[in-house]
Amino acid sequence: MLHIEYVHYEALRAHGEETYPHECCGVLLGRSLAGVNHVREIVRAGNTRTDSAHNRYNIAPQELIKIQRQARTAGLDIVGFYHSHPDHPAQWSTTDFAEAHWIGCSYVITSTDHGRAITTNSFLLAGTTEEDKRFEDESIEIEIAQPQASEIQPGVTEITIHGDPA
Amino acid sequence: MKIHIPTPLRAYTGGQETITLAAQNVGGALVALTTEFPALRQHLLTPEGKTRSFVNLYLNDDDVRYLPEKDDSPVSDSDELTIIPSIAGGCCL
Image (cartoon, rainbow over all chains, first blue to last red; front, side):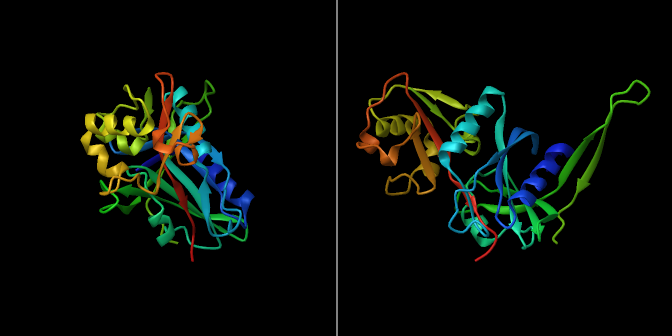
């Protein structure tokens, strides 16, 4: 399962709208606990595939290293990545699978239809090696923080999305 | 020197994010690392002993592939080697 605050969930979807008709990409920082990838922060990354940005993305290793350092300083880990599929479903592609190497991490995909974010799905890269890796549908639990006003009981509302195949 | 291990490979280093070891060059550091943590080897190297194509090695801020001496590049105790698998993909053909 992927657990993410609403503000981060909306931010990664908005990123896909901003870069349309190109793919956006970014990194999810947080902690992995008891099989749940908890997102604490998202970091936008540049898509270096300027030759084919409408259907490809790549994060420069140098940028990834900087993000990993940032995570380390904050006491966080890289727990996943996100990107968008302009005018295509929010489903992993053969290219996504071939290029996925971060086993145990969440791969979040948002479909953007004519510049509007439609569906967001998450897939866990499961397995132990390159030979037995596989994508598994992963539910997304969205945490919505409530106002902390004295007359309102503090707490959170959680929405769980189970693999929308759209 | 310090070697930084990416999230997916920490399962093979007992959960350690940073490994400190002594080595004379990059190749030696990898040998020392995979000797101490043998299960890492198949994730970093091909059966022929080459670094897997999707595994990036950075000595401080430099891609080891583009260093003049590549794996033979000398290292000191203050150097940091970062192992970072690539991240890429795309929606369709």
